Length: 136
Image (cartoon, rainbow, N blue to C red; front, side, top):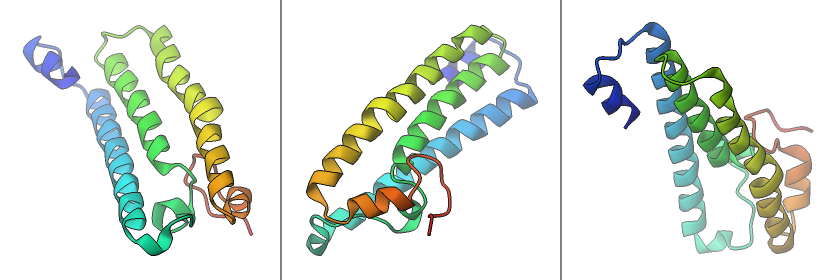
């Protein structure tokens, strides 16, 4: 929709808008790939009550949430770079970030702690959101 708006309202496309669009597209790819990795993991019945700690999930406990957060920042960057969104609208992606960091991630971690015996060790070694190397 933002792209359609830009194309139908004669908004000039600049390098910042192109970069913001690429950033947003890559965020969607991150979310999609991590969700697909989890779907494949859960499809194997031997993985019931086990922790997904491979591929992107080796570097982040919630890479799909990271993709979602980056998507909202990308939308903000697109609006900002097109000259249509005022700077103060940063409150929108920051609110999404806060909701994930302080509500969604802790709720999912709490649920996983109850259902997976090795999840505490995984939590101690793996970043909540950012794709970082695991701690030893």
